[in-house]
Image 1: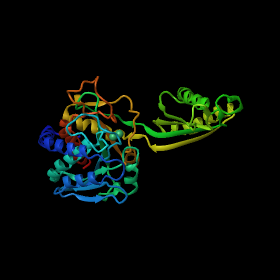
Image 2: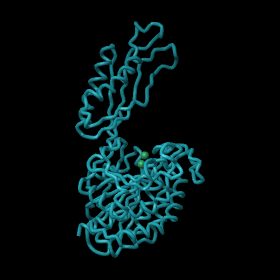
Image 3: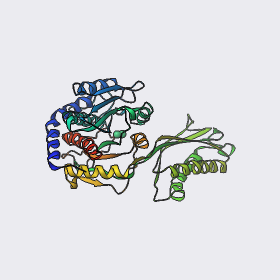
Image 4: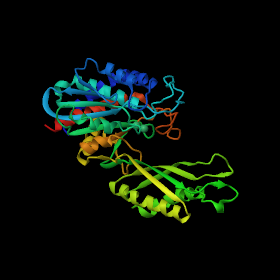
Amino acid sequence: VSKNVTDALALADQGLRRSDDLVALRRRLHRIPEVGLHLPQTQSAILAELEGLGLEITLGDRITSVTAVLRGGGPGDTVLLRSDMDGLPIRERSGLAWASTNGAMHACGHDLHMSGLVGAARILAENRDRLHGDVVFVFQPGEEGHGGGRIMVEDGVLAASGTLPVACFAIHVLPTGPAGAFRTKAGAVMAGMNELRVTVRGVGGHASAPHELRDPVPVIAEITLALQTLVTRRFDVADPVVITVTQLSSASEAVNVVPASASLAASVRTLSAASLETLKVEVPRLANGIAAAHGCAAEIEIVELYPVTVNDAAETAFAVDALGAAFGGQRVDVMTSPMMASEDFSYLLDAAPGAFLLMNATPDAVGPENAQTLHSDSVVFDDSLLGDHAVALATLALERLAGAR
Ligand SMILES: [Zn+2]
Ligand SMILES: [Zn+2]
């Protein structure tokens, strides 16, 4: 890393000067959360913010993405910086003055990500002459389970500048942990996300005569519990798997009616392709076996949603060094284990090297014991850290391109 202290201070100063603007932008975005792949209001808000920066802008055909290319003052490689754009279908109960009232909520901090990336675009556009290569700013809809990242890769976001990026970076805020700290790790950093559905089919009828039926309800209950034993007996503890059954249902419309079928749905998190393959063999064997033992039949569906987010070792080491130089080593932690949450930045990292990082943004007024998690209807973030978020992204791009010369 070629970072010198003067550069870092100059960038930090620019971040500080931006901070009020970015907070105002973040709060405007917070009021207009949109869900899914089509976010027209959010897209036009971002476009207005990027105006006048001299960026080459492309809008998505299939989704409301914004891809903006900044050409540096000298030739060089390309670095890609990405923000997600979507909110969640959650009714906000944060009590904040700028809370959303439209029935959706930026409960995952994507409003902060957009503001931070706008800040980085402004800083880098101002420092265009010092930039050796190009920076691609990606604003991506549909991170929350809609696969926006996959669509953008399919639609060629990696070719936006004309050359494949040498590195891709994203920084996700977290509403817990010491404010301002950055965290990441090499290798698997976020889990793969999959959905499991099991339906047990039996024979329904009168609740007073189960011996004449094939009651699927105790069978789905047995499968629910057996899945937890499966996790501990069929998977290596060093390659963790989480199976969380979140939905149980039956087709019964009345308490005195045994239904003909009962089903479960589970969120399944994995950290390797190998454990996903094991899952595809073991879960059907378990469910079919238990159902057969009770004279029922099982149908099993496993839907792969997001792959594991895997950080490139060299790009992660670069990011840790660059942020340590810019903010001080005490603000950068190397995680000892991955988070079992998931991210569709994984699609970009499957196609190009890079690193996904986390930044803690817990407000001082909210103690660690009261901090809510991402996706909570009352989660709050410290948006005074947006200047740092912007500087961190700008630093990664500027330093990575300087180092690659
Ligand atoms: Zn989320
Ligand atoms: Zn998120």
